[in-house]
Amino acid sequence: MSFPVTLIDLAGYIALLLWGTHMVQTGIQRTFGPKLRSILGAALKNRFRSFLAGIGVTAVLQSSTATGLMVAGFAAGGLVDLVPALAVMLGANVGTTLIVQVLSFDVAAAAPVLILIGFLLFRRDSSTPTHDLGRVFIGLGLMLMALHQLLSLMTPYEDAPSLRLLLGAISTEPVLDVLLAAAFTWAVHSSVAVVLLVMSLAANGVVPPEAAFALVLGANLGTAINPVIEGVSSDDPAAKRLPIGNLANRLLGVIVALVLLRWIGPLMVTVEPDNARAVADFHTLFNLALAVIFLPLLTPYSKLLQRLLPRRVDPADPSRPLYLDVAARETPIVALGGAAREAMRLADVLETMLHGARDALHKGDRKMIAETKRMDDVLDHLNTAIKTYLTSLDPESLSDADHRRLGEILNFAMNMEQAGDVIDGNLLPHCAKRLKRGLVFSKEGEAELLGMMDRLVTNLRTAASLFMTDDRRAARLLVDEKVAFRDLEAAATQSHFDRLRTGRRDTAETSALHLDLLRDMKRVNGHIVAAAAYPVLERSGELLPSRVTDGEGM
Image (cartoon, rainbow, N blue to C red; front, side, top):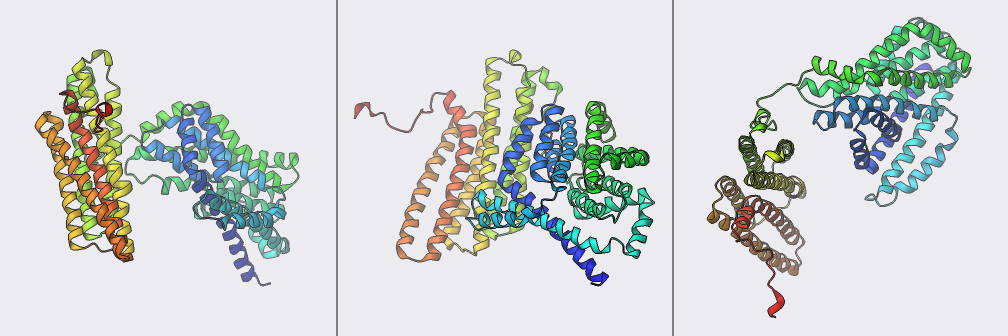
């Protein structure tokens, strides 16, 4: 077989190895993604639990990059401190070595069985986790098959003079080995795949053990580059603390290991004569050594990163609180006033979302739908900031009136955020469905929906005003809007059933979407009313505990 054809085969098997890794990662994430995120969230309390969680989650995901991106999202959002986040990354790096250790044994015979099991699972209903588990088994089988083929492909070329000459020249320059492996790992986004490839080269004697160890160091360095380049998309340097911190400690470890490689290399070969196993063991020992060295030093290391990468305050960031003054917490009346002003910003953001949803419904603009969905993140951040600020106030320094006002602010903020969730999770997806299916409302139906959107905006402005004035008349008017929305939903439901009787599928589908949109608007309106009107009427004794009549007189 000619050398160019062999290169094509080599590239194909490497691509198969990467695709198998990708299938395993996506299958695991789709099946257990939310659970893995909750496990990480619960474990991010101290560095040792975080370290163990990083090992476990990465061993399941087969990707330290995927684990790092999850933790980077937590850290960038301020949901976790930098110390446990760095500990997770140290654990994630160790977790990848467990995958390599398992695959370093001769398990290629299991590939057809894994693919068969995966195929049978994958053929089942695509809505079930079984379908995604099928992807995992197929991916594992493809990985084992690709590794076996790589090994078979390289065997005839062990003694090729040109290849020996090329790799021999590279083997004399460990620094060059590190740079080449780092660049290749960055390009293929998988240190596991690169280390496994190095193992196959070492097993066939294509590269000497010391060069293989240098290539492993490069793979460890390359996998830390991806999160820095492709991690959290933010101009804030603080968002890059975790990936840069992970890259820096690995770079330092690689430099030290390179210096000691002339002594470590012969020792590893003496302890483990099998070159492939020696590569896997070196990969594991390198990451374990980094974890042992850096875990006790994470506190000063995190402080250094915070000093070198200070948080940037962007005045134009709509999710940045403007009125939550830390110094004002000593004066509750001032602190509550600032929190109320911040809560009013939630109403402004929600109004922007309503206008965006109206335009998306009227014009069918995908870009508008995407931009409006992003505003929900602003609501979430502001709501979290308000709750954190208010719960930090000393309860002993608050009067009864202060406690009441604090509860009203929390209630208003919560309902504004929940109304935004309905827009983001229900109303906008229905607008996108209409656009995707090419459904067209009648002129009367579209006018009715747009009119209801306008009423929502008006009600929101009334609620914002009521939140500041506590006017009972405005509260009654706002509550009356619930009745109006309820009547409209009942009329729309009846119209939908009437259209179903006509047997026209297009009309029935459009009326069903019309009804879904109206129900979403009704839910948004319910949160708007609950945000401001209910507290006022409850305080004045005008809010009934239930709309159900008392049955005692019946």
